[in-house]
Length: 462
Image (cartoon, rainbow, N blue to C red; front, side):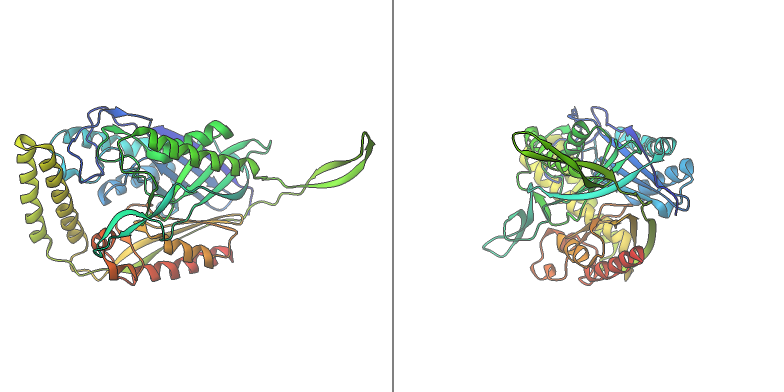
């Protein structure tokens, strides 16, 4: 095990004005007016004498299998890092460009495709840049608390589950931070991990925003003076306490609150611990003890990467052709209303077409299958573990994984390496609701994720 090296790279991936905006079934507009804040792809490359990994943070809601593959192929080609050692994570902002529901676009599709076509090389370029900036680092971690999130599965008196503020439900307020310092003790990179759906800015807004993760990242960089990588947590059933708004100040405030808490944690982290020894006493108004600060010997951090494919059980799906026909009828109705309907009718038709398209897409992917291969990736850096899967895991899954982890800090995330789909806990299926109805997975999936994650964590620990 050699010394740990780290490097950071960044590409601007801000969409142009006029690019279709996506993420909301209720929105009536298609094109975005412009960006309220730049969008970035940020890459952190970690390397020692035996292993290497690239951790990529992208301001995007996510990508389908086709575009995820193109992005990962471009990263592998330029970096020569094996694909299983690339972690490609999205912040999951819902007020960015439309990168995954292209069939709903009837205005500006060429701009959406043009934007997507530029991303593989720009994201890969950030990884390449990080490789050129590798330097020896020390690292340590810490945690704080920020309550900008809340459980979102609200049960109405009728028994219906809707997306709202469920104050009695679980939500993890933990702000997890990893700090990397260069040999001179100056911060080289910060990882910020937090779990909350970036749905602060919603269908009313026509400006592209990275939502609160973009502001949080910028705040940390202003306070600490080094690049920050944001990693989304297990946010499948967690929402902002104040969200679903067109008020841009709302996401800016939430991001600043999170960023300032993360900065406070980062400032308190010592990557090179010191020991005090009594040097003497000076007489003043009171006798005052003086101390020598002696740095303790720093060991090279234990750095390991484990990636495995796990099998998650699927629901039974209707034939995709049947569902695609239904979706196409609704898309044609939406196109008609966009030409002649009012805003309320367009909003309802957009929601219907979006939901039908989601059903058809899931059927195309999973019809006739009993299980789905799902990547589980673990990275150990010293006494910290970063664990990631695709999809949108519930916060209870995170609670079980962290509770069983041998590591002092465990950063469990979804939204990584492609793949859509909520991963609810088994008990949620009794109540239903959006996450359960749209999930491709059978109720046993969460238990498998927890069990397999525990195995990976203990393998990393050994």
